[in-house]
Image (cartoon, rainbow, N blue to C red; front, side):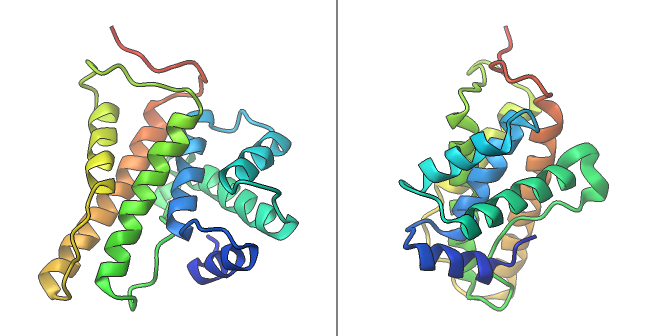
Length: 181
């Protein structure tokens, strides 16, 4: 997985105003919707559109590496190796909590950008997971340091990770909208 700091440095060098976790969420949401059906050139154009401009080669390659690693780690649950791109555990808990919210927001945007939709009446695990990700994305409270909050945050991160695995597995490989009647 691209190291958070390296991803952040590349985004800063480019002048992008995206948080690394948000961009990784965008990538993974897009990946869950399109699987491996997209071509690299098309993905690079999508990445550039997210960044509102031209995509420097090094940043494009970093994003493509994250996409490919995500695909590899999500396919067939891949021994559950999939992980989220978040600040390290030494970062303040409020920074990590904000990052998980941004990751979820990015995921939902990346998935939605592909045109895939969930039926609002759907009661499936995928629909519930997407609703939960939306709730996590909406978290706005500062999180004070403390062991209980640390444990809660770790549970949320694990929930998001497993939800992503579920969404990837359950959405199938079709690029048609997901609807249930």
